[in-house]
Image (cartoon, rainbow, N blue to C red):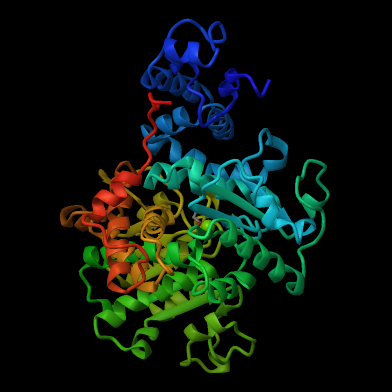
Length: 545
Ligand SMILES: O=C([O-])CC(=O)C(=O)O
Ligand SMILES: [Mg+2]
């Protein structure tokens, strides 16, 4: 069967279904294999839209969209790009979270590549098995911290898959140049080890002396096979992610989306929140719940804003308080702190003054901004939010953990408990909330606004590395997408419908920054915009094939 030209109907990148013209049907021996009517992609898309909305359940919608992708990729992206606001919450957070949790049960068709501990020594040759010759972007996870859902092992594949669908729709990477990857280093989640449908290797996570060599072999093989590829680390647990980033960021073209992408997108939202509350930066007091990859990444990015405004690192640090599962992080708490936590540990508390809960910290600090990246749903309680709102006119409340159930509070709770005064953002989408006759539009502070453009820019100029300055540039570029008038109404992120234009502009600014820093490894083009636009994929049928 493979040798027949009609096999094209089973190839998702080439298949057009009823979109094949009569001439193509003759050329590929498709006559009689399709219903007679030739349809435009718009007509096909209209049917798929009807099919999509006929599903009541979000997981069914997810399965539907990914099955569409598996049979006709162009049509899938056409549908997705024309219905971003409706469909991003399905292929991405929150529904992708549920899809990952049930990955083994709902598995239908393999996407991407898996590199397991049993593949040690074979990874380079395995890469030759990949269906496409050229790969420009890899999103890799080891499934150890999927969203705020914990260790999902190989079930985490939904995340690299979903992120890359956003790379295609948002930034315009051609789908055939993207590769989702899971490194299977085992799982410590007993439920999956006992689950007959679990699809990964069934053993506990590898110890570090086996884990790091596995990741290293993968990276060496990937950059040997595709020397210009960009690797995005995604959802690696806190005990590995910082080390991996430190170790590889100046060796390969790579970045960590949870540390740097989330850092950048929240910096952008914070820039706009400061515009909205009109209080000088140095007067802000930021309390973070959660000191993992995202919490630290966000704080590091916001620190740069203080420094730019002439505040010393030392003074800027005094505006940050971190709370983890044991309470306020201090130098006197008596536990061994990771280097990342140490840099934000408060020095102004004696061992006797330890604050054990977020509520105690909020009472003492009277924060202007409360930033949740804890993975613990509804941990911003009514008491905490009301306490905060007593002391600040416009509290900045970011409930950023994903998916929706893990958000530290809902949009409705935040607006209600602050009597409609807060500036709110969440990681997963919430619908607009009407409170006392005013409609509040919650912002989605999700790295989806950053990674597509940051990745596209760094990839197209063949950046040596992804620098902090490129990440800050991405944040600032994003922040300009919300006009003053909207910012003053509390809107701090732009709508999703402009994601292609936003990502394009971020890519251009990132490339300019890369040239400025001597990081770009291509000849400077006459027009950076033209370079970006000429690369970008559009989901239309190619009539020349
Ligand atoms: O995937 C998302 O929606 C954002 C993210 O990186 C995470 O929560 O880990
Ligand atoms: Mg992530």
